[in-house]
Image (tube, rainbow, N blue to C red; front, top):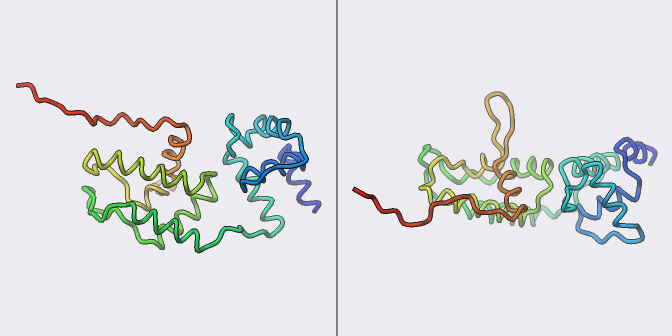
Length: 191
């Protein structure tokens, strides 16, 4: 227990702050605390963004505390497989102009999603909306320069940097600005 208190105090959190943060993470109702005060404090130390969504820093703090207590995520593996299957089915059964197939193997997707959800605070619902937005955008452009289903989640560059275009699209979805500037209007060629 001492390790828990040291960890949260090193992160400038009170037990009430952490409780509210954890409730947001698990979609639970925080009770018996001054929620307004705790939210203000969590935003001040960047555990929440201005819209009270948990940040990467907030997710990292929760993961650290879970590690201290040896906690395992309560998420049902069957539910995760269902989401991965749905994600897999969204992708077209085609070979991209790059020469790679759009759909990656499900085992590769599992590993990529484990990394993604450890790194980013987005929900499966947001992931699905972001993926649909991405696929719609690239379909209108003839699939040119589109990433595979695995590389969309996580791509490791030759210099070992890791990027996630999925995280970028999740951010777009959560911001509500999903207009990607597609030219979906008719064009006339003037001679």
